[in-house]
Amino acid sequence: MSILITGGAGFIGSHFALRMVNQGKHVVVLDKLTYAGNIENLNEITGDENKFKYFKFYKGDICNQELVGHIFSSEGVDVVINFAAETHVDRSIMSAGTFIDTDIKGVFVLLEASKRHGIKKFIQVSTDEVYGTVYHDAFKETDTLNPSNPYSASKTGGDRLAYAYWVTYKLPIIITRASNNYGDYQHPEKFIPLFITNALEDKKLPLYGDGQQIRDWIHVEDHCAAIDFLIVHGENGEVYNIGGGNERCNIDTTYFILDELNKPRTLIEHVKDREGHDRRYALDCTKIMSLGWKTQIKFETGLRDTIKWYKNNQKWWKQIKNSAFVEYYNRQYAHRFVNTCK
Ligand code: NAD
Ligand code: TDX
Image 1 (cartoon, helix red, strand yellow):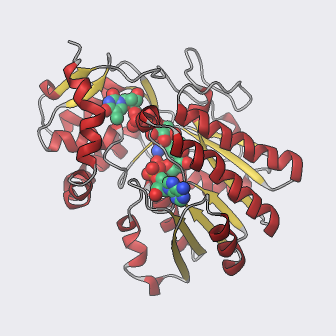
Image 2: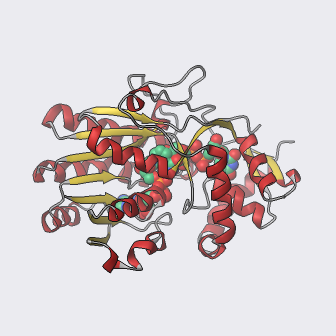
């Protein structure tokens, strides 16, 4: 089995790639190495290639039909896990173009190549954001999709396009919709790593609005285990929610981070809210759980370990934060700090 992991140099993809090589799988990673991709996330694999049966890295774009076609024929790909995406809601609000390209057209290119080459399984890694905000209970896989920002709308496009290739061409597709991931190697512009690293640097933590928005957190290893589980136990043409069962208000998560680091709560700055900010995400995971999957990592334990990891791996995130990140941070936050809401 040759498994193509797109976006394998990103946060979740790199964890999944390590999991697959550890199982002795023949692994091929295709990643464009955007600002979010980091070859160092794969150091555990590339540092000791002899340890693994087969690992190959291609730097490139999933929208590049020629390159994707070449990888499928020369590597004999029979399983595709599509993690590659533009993933940050705030960036999609600033500029949506690359989201449309990668999260919709990129999925199309991968689906076409998969159809031509008669692959055995295609997992489209979608997101809970496709449902939009949920005010009561939790979303089921059959609920209406109601994405509300350019990121979630383009992910919805990829999600439904994958489904269409199952219905129309019987391409063996599975769609997963996970909740918010956390863990090591997450890019420091996302909420949890941004707040941990800002606190370590004694910088302000820009909490959007009242901080009462709710996210359901899942540890990245639990998410990867669920996808691995679905390759074997999932049914083609089906959608599976993958939630952590850990709904927390952003302000409570912020307090936890500050308390763990012994930093004062005065570092919190309530700033101008995200436009169209989804208030709450929550998933009903009965479907995947009835097949026998469940999470293993308790949120507080996982978050404590994540905080320790960022404390002990400052070189990794400082390299990122000291580069193009500075310009992004100013563009994203300068006006927010001006509009601080007390
Ligand atoms: P990430 O931003 O850390 O990584 C994305 C990776 O994709 C990067 O390595 C980047 O270089 C690569 N990439 C981007 N555009 C590409 C292109 N055109 N061609 C090839 N590679 C490209 O993202 P992540 O948090 O690891 O998310 C991975 C997947 O999981 C995404 O599809 C995302 O929508 C989905 N997801 C993420 C979360 C979460 O909380 N992080 C939750 C649910 C679903
Ligand atoms: O500076 C911040 N301040 C703040 O209050 C940032 C970056 C975020 N937030 C809030 C916004 C959200 O309510 O924290 C919450 C989490 O924000 P993000 O880390 O940007 O994640 P979110 O928008 O919830 O989307 C994430 O989960 C679903 C991932 O980035 C997506 O890729 C995934 O599909």
